[in-house]
Length: 130
Image (tube, rainbow, N blue to C red; front, side):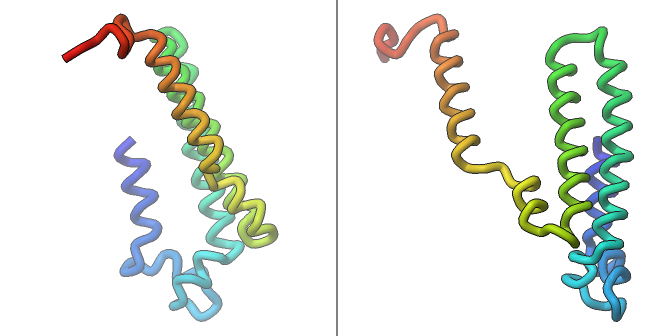
């Protein structure tokens, strides 16, 4: 996984000029970041990693449910982020929605996980004293 994060990070280093090369002048970072060419290339890059993670998901079928869930969620995230990058030049609002984790759903998930954790704990807060 280190290869994924390092290779993704290298794409955005301004000193290397990868993003700038996609601008019309060749030196504008923000224009390159919003260009159709850069986002298309980044979408293809993410699809490639999504397919690699899918292979790892298939290989993890014999291990345990934790790895299956981990790689399934990670795989879905790669494909959603790829779809978002394909939408950046034509529909930025949809791309932003695809890239966001909404606070309400995140808060609901955290509160639900806290309820599950509390119900699974061997001693509740009423029986535990310091």
